[in-house]
Image (tube, rainbow, N blue to C red; front, side, top):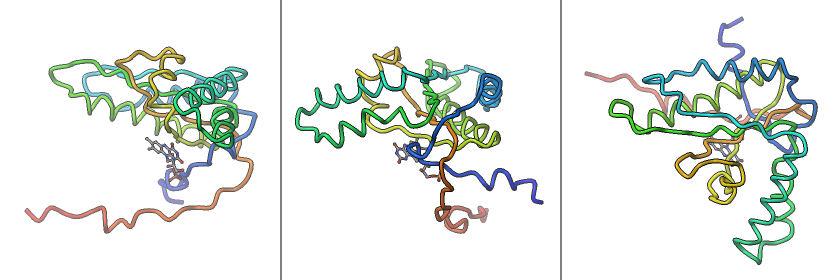
Length: 188
Ligand SMILES: Cc1cc2nc3c(=O)[nH]c(=O)nc-3n(C[C@H](O)[C@H](O)[C@H](O)COP(=O)(O)O)c2cc1C
C-alpha cells in the first residue's frame, strides 16, 4: 500500500452530516497534539484553539440567529433556522483563532499560514481516528459581534471552525484538481 494512502483518503464530511459521539478526552488531546506539530517560523505560536461543545453549541446558534436578525430584520426564517443550527450538528467544533503578532522577521501572512496548517492538521488527525470533519467559516467567522461573544479580540481572527463528529453517511468523493494545471517545472 502506498505510504500516502491515508493522506489521499482525506475528504470533508459536511457538518450537517456529523453526529455524536465526538472524540473522547484522550482522542481530543491527541487530535490537538497533532496540531501542535505545525511548521511555525520564529516559533511565534500565532494561534489558539477554542472548543465549542455541549450546550454551548446551541447558545452560539441562538446568538447567531439573533445577530442575523439584528444585521437584517428581513432575514428569512429558513436562514435564521440554519444559523440557529449551524453549530449544533457536530458534537465538537474547534474554533481556530489566528493571533498574529508584529514581528520584524515573520510577516503576518506566514503566521496566518501556520494557523491554516493547524486547521488542516486537525482535519487529518480527526480523520485518523475515524471521525468526519469539515473546515467552515461563513459570515459568523467574520462578524465582530460573534467574535466578541466568543471572547476573540479585535486583533485576532477566526481561521476556521473545525466541525468534528461521526459521519452519518458515506460522502461521495468530489473531483480533485488536475495536477498538470497546478504543477510545472521551472525551465531555468
Ligand atoms: C478557509 C476555508 C473556509 C471554508 N469555509 C467554508 C464554508 O463556510 N462553507 C462551505 O461549504 N465550505 C467551506 N470550506 C470548504 C470545506 O472545508 C471543504 O473543503 C469542502 O466541503 C470540500 O471538501 P474537501 O475538503 O473534501 O475538498 C472552507 C474551506 C477553507 C479552506
